[in-house]
Length: 184
Image (cartoon, rainbow, N blue to C red; front, side, top):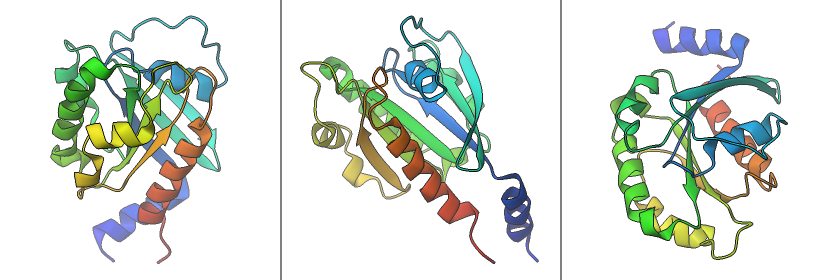
């Protein structure tokens, strides 16, 4: 029995998944996490470091790491890559001025060796606001169709209303489970 098989069997018993939520500052990462956890989202302040939430969903224990997206904090993102099975990239769909910056940061992340094999969920957030770009426009701006190294999906959502958050997390779990919790 190989090491990978042993690790998979151990994982199967735990059914524990580590998710890393990243994106530029003000994209809505903390709001998504709080909304998913049923917390009040009326007052959110910028994340100056990280938040960790452990949630139970569909029989899985999700350890979600929400890391601040300010430019000064991005160099620290690499400290959170270890053992990440799912990457949630949150995009502010109304912030057209920083889409190129968003694309570059995501591209750098996907080249990280410790994120190899991680499933990528892109949340095109703030769809409830006027002037937001569609998920198709975000997909094109981020060059998502060029990503061959990771399974990915883009979902339009609203962190404030909760629209499509559950659908996104369900897709992410299905993809991760198909990779990790396969029958032997």
